[in-house]
Image (tube, rainbow, N blue to C red):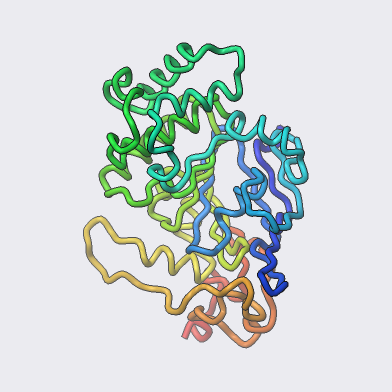
Length: 329
C-alpha cells in the first residue's frame, strides 16, 4: 500500500498564556488524507480543527509548542526548517483561507497578487507568463472575462468571486494537497453550492487531496469521502461520510446533525445546550460530558479513548449505536 499524502500522528499543540499557564489546544490528533480524497473536519469554533492544519504549515503564533508527527509524502513537517517549509507551503500544499476580502491586499490588482505567488516558487518564469497563468486559473475556477478580471482590485469582486480568486491562488502552483478553511463562510447558499461544486470538480479533474474545515456538517455531506468530528481539541468521531451520518455513534455528532436544516423545512432544529470548554479550564473526564444528554458519572471522571464503535470510530463511553433505552433516558 502507498503511504498517505498527509499523515498526522499524535499531533499536539500547547499554548502558554500571559500568566504562564499552559493548556493543550490539540490533544493527540491522528488523521490521514490520500491523493484525490476529500477529508471533512467539522466542529464548533475552538474545537481545534483549524490549528491542526496550521500547525504543520508553521502558521501558528509564536509561543505555540507543537509535538507529534505530520508527514507529507513521507517527509516530516514538524520541526522542519523555515526555508524548507516555505518551499512546500503554497507550492505542494495550497491554502484557501476563511476571509477572501482580508486575505488579499486591497491596493494591489488580483492578477499581480496571484502572479507573485507563482513567481515566488518559479524564479525562471517571466511576469507576463505568470499573468497568463493567472488568466488560465481564473478561467478554471469559472471567473468570467478572466483577461479583464486579472487587472481588477479585490473590492471590484463580489464575495463569491473573491472566494473563486482565493481558490485560484491556492491552485496557482499545482499543489498536491489543498487546505480549505471555512471556504463558504459568509456566502449565501446559492454561491456556497457553486463553490462546493467547483471544489468537487477540481478534486476530480486535478486529483488533489482536499481537507475541508467547517463548522457545518451540511457543507461536507455531499463532497467529503471521510469526516472527522472534533471537540475540545481532539477527534470524537471519524469515519466514512454515509456511516457517520446514518450510524452516528457520538452524541456531539448527533447534535451537529440535528442542527442542519432539512430541504423541506420540516422539523424543529435542535440545539446543543451549553458552550464549548476553554482550553485553560477544561473539565475532567470527557470534555463534552457537561453538555451531553447521555452522560453518566464515569463520563465526568475518565476521558474515553477513540475506538471502533460499529461503522465509525468514536470517543464515547456510551456510543449511541449501543446505548440502552435506560441510559438514553
